[in-house]
Image (cartoon, rainbow, N blue to C red; front, side, top):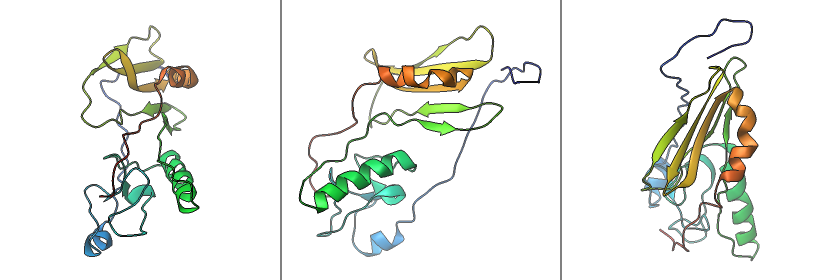
Length: 172
């Protein structure tokens, strides 16, 4: 990798980790179904009547997404549902941006449960960035951009298929 004002360095691995885990104890005590989060249906509804979950504690489509973009999608859909327009939660490709000045990252993780496929890593001749793309049946399902390659975020987002949704799921 090439860093500004520093010599080029070789790395085998770059790791970024955040330790967010929802506390679902109260939900369990209340009789709600939980796994990684509080399990909801397509509309954010929980097992209990008139109870919805969103944000870090919610598990929708089998996914527990703990960052801002999915929370916005959940809140908009749940608000419409609560005001009379039944609206399923849809997740478009939502990049996670790690803003490190020396080595920025843009990640669009593979979100579909039980997906098969493989990562393809593109070599970058000048070692200033990296691109990895996950394909399933020749369809782009996720990607990781590092270093100067993060400038290509919008190009890669344009290649992503539509929303991550499932058929109407009944309340858990």
